[in-house]
Length: 118
Image (cartoon, rainbow, N blue to C red; front, side, top):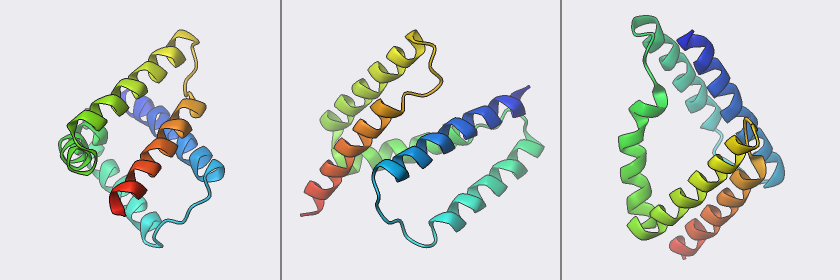
């Protein structure tokens, strides 16, 4: 049951990323596919040893620190609030994924990253 849930979660994330890459043509480093494949393999190994392993929960502490360093606490809180609102709206409509809200958040995040690197 946990593995089926993880597969649905991965499929949803994959669909979101595919839509974002289609809507916002940008390039990623060539090694991106290799890193993604390595993460999938490592998650499979971890799930073999611990069926309750959650890659997203494991990565959260690092991602939170990195996002805080990149955006600052105030901007990160605002972005998380927007994402939470979008997720709640999608859940209220019984949508599995709200791609429009996700792409809008990515657009704002990309703008912030560009501004911070100038």
